[in-house]
Length: 143
Image: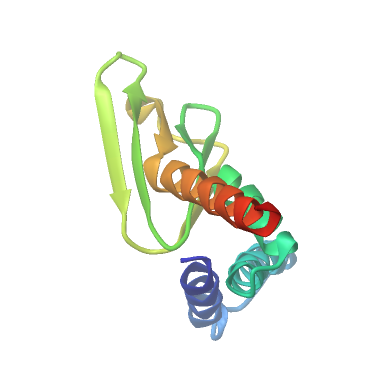
């Protein structure tokens, strides 16, 4: 999934900004996002090659995808290639979000009317699967 998310993210960045006139701040955002998607792609490739660095990078990338925060002063979400988020609005009502493409969102002026906090269920499942598969590989090599 990381190979798909990283590759798709890089393609989307290229599509979005190929013909856009870029300010210095927009260029900085593009560079940061590109680095993130390259790390995501590298994590997937190293994991596929069964390298320890792939496991570590994958856990870091999945951990970065856990929070989904939308509040008046701040908003953050990251999901690649998808995210299914469950959480609660400030009113206490449940809130769910599904994003079916790589996405990154960061805002300092989110709408307080839709404030909520959630956790990406896909990232949790992938982290559990990563740890379980790593333990199985470790047990096979030691036993």
